[in-house]
Image (cartoon, rainbow, N blue to C red):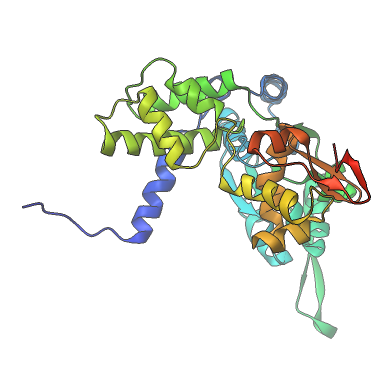
Length: 345
C-alpha cells in the first residue's frame, strides 16, 4: 500500500517557485551569456563599492525570459543589499509606492517589473524619489489637504520592461544605466543547461543538452522549462537518462519543432498566410483570429519570429516571409491582379 499526503495548491506553488529560483545564478561570475552587460555591471558595482555609495538606477529591457529579474537579484547580492520587489500594475496609487519607499534603507534595491505599466500619477510621484531621494505626499483632501515632504534614504531603483518604447521620456532619462538583453546563442544556452542539469542531478548523453538548447528560442527560461519537461518524460518513459531518443520524443510531445517554434507560433504564421494572404495584417486582427491577447503575441510570439526572419513588421501591419512558408510547407499566395508576382516575397 502506498501512503500519500495531501499538498495544498499554495504549497505546490511555493515549491515550484523555490525550485525555479534555485536554478537562478546568485552572483555575476555564475551568470552565463550577456557578456557586455555583465562587464559593464561589474565595473559599475566595483566603482560603487569603492566609493561606498549605492548604484545608480538601472533599467533592463528586452524580450521576456532573458534574465532581467535574475540580474536584479544578482545586483542586490553583489552589493550585499536587501531587495524589495513589485510590479508596475501592482502600484496603482501614490500610497502603494509610499509604503515601499518608507521601508527602504540606504543602499537597498527596489525592483519594479514591467515598469512601463506604471500609471502616470505613480510615475510622476517617483520622479523626485529617483532624483532627489524625497517625495511629496498629500494627506487628507479638500480644505484639509496638505503636502508633507518625506526625505528618503539613498536607494537603487531597478526597472525591467519588455517594451522600452512604451516608457515615457522623463522616466527613461532618470535611469543612469540602461542595458538591453539580447537572445542567447546556442552555446550559451548549452552552458546554462549543463549548470541546470548538474543542479538537478541529471544524467545526460553527449549532445542531448545541445539539442534542447537549439530549440529553446534563444531564451534561458524556455531552455530550463524544456529541460524539466524532458526530465519528467525520461523519468516516466525511460530510465531517467536523457538520451537523444528520449529528448526527441519529449520535444515532439511538447510540439516543439527543430527551430524551436511551438504550436502558437505556427498558428500565428498559418493565420497570416491562410486568413490574411500573407499579410499585411494588424496585430489586433490576428489576435482576434487566434483568440489570444495582443500582449501575448507582441511579447512572447513576435520577438522570436522576427529574430529568425519569419515575420516582418511594416507600417501597414505584419507580413509573413518566404522562409516561414518554406519552413511550414505552406503555399505562397499571389497578389490579386498580378498572378505572376508572389504576394509578399
